[in-house]
Length: 155
Image (cartoon, rainbow, N blue to C red):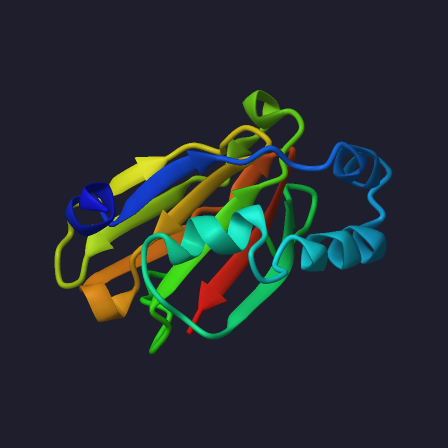
């Protein structure tokens, strides 16, 4: 909990089902999305890990695929995820070392100074504080390769 409050984020490693890797390699995003939904079931490893930080009743998520080949790929903006109590990014990157850009930054609201994390290995869960805690974040553009994460929000 201390890192979440002091740094704005904390990292955990989850053991994910092996079948996710095949779906990612085949870029079968629809099936991947259905498999990721299973990770959010009550009392699942992901649910319990998130609830160890704060109580919530609802999880929303997206499968985020950012590809350097997309002409619209650009840096995100600093934002705080509104009224959500917690946010997370679960790395689904199979070759995280081959991805350039795609970093995620965290900073206290109103400050210029930030912490920036590179693209993480498969199964790394970054849990981060939202505006409710006085933090904001942004994702930088992917300049080489493919960045795949399950991005989520708890309310």
